[in-house]
Amino acid sequence: MSDEILTEVIDRIGVARINRPKVLNALNLATMEQLVEALERFDADPDIRCMLLTGNERAFAAGADITDMTDASMVDMVQRNQFARWERIKRIAKPIVAGVSGYALGGGCELMMHCDIVIASETARLGQPEINIGVMPGAGGTQRLTRAIGKAGAMDLVLTGRMISAREALAMGLVSRVVPAEHYYEEALKVCHELCTRSPIALRLAKESVLKAFETTLAEGLEYERKLFYMLFATDDQKEGMRAFLEKRQPVFAGR
Ligand code: DAK
Image (cartoon, rainbow, N blue to C red; front, side, top):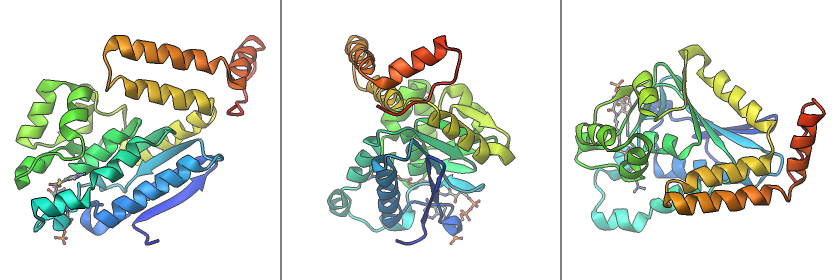
């Protein structure tokens, strides 16, 4: 495996770092494949509780690699079936925290939107600038962005291609928290450490339930949530969590 995606395990956290600094972490096909494989490996590893996806200070990812697409025909794009990789990211069951600094543009912003909690450095610059190069978002940008921030904001970003600051993104509801530039990675890691202390099965079902809200009516979503809520009463973790509360101690969740 090449070193365009660096991985490490810190305690029970799977860390994946996009590592193409010369091109601001532009995501080419090989990098995307390596990233998806790394996330799937972490997802399948019972010792890993959550994941941290990050880039470097200058860029989370400045988009899909434009050199991959410049001369592609419509048929090339169809045959590449790049969407399949993005679908695989969508199926990752464990929580993914994004630590975002610098540019998160186009496919980079879409990748960030596939993550569950986004910790952004105050230097982060986000947007969907595909319109500036004659195309439009292709990995959910028109759909996830619209659901995340509403029509007015999504139209503004998608049609003008303008970049927004981390603070503006926070106000729009596109990122979870904004932190000083020098702390974004450690804050994202801190969130991951917190998630490691939670019940992994409850995390998994809670993630699934929140994501369901993107795809259902309110009534269907509530019904779905209710079923998952009942399911948790079949776990040891529910008993442990509630008993620990009553016994005024920290719970120890086994994930069963
Ligand atoms: N692709 C390839 N190279 C890139 C790149 C990108 N997206 N972004 C930056 N680079 C390269 C630059 O070409 C430059 O390379 P050299 O000239 O040094 O060889 C190097 O990174 C440094 O960039 P700059 O010199 O431009 O740096 P600046 O600080 O001046 O500007 C910038 C930073 C981020 C504003 C600028 O680089 C920029 O505008 N970059 C392009 C941003 C962009 O348009 N992103 C959207 C790309 S389209 C799909 C899924 C997803 C997508 C498509 C399909 N399917 C599932 C089918 C996604 C599409 C996109 O993301």
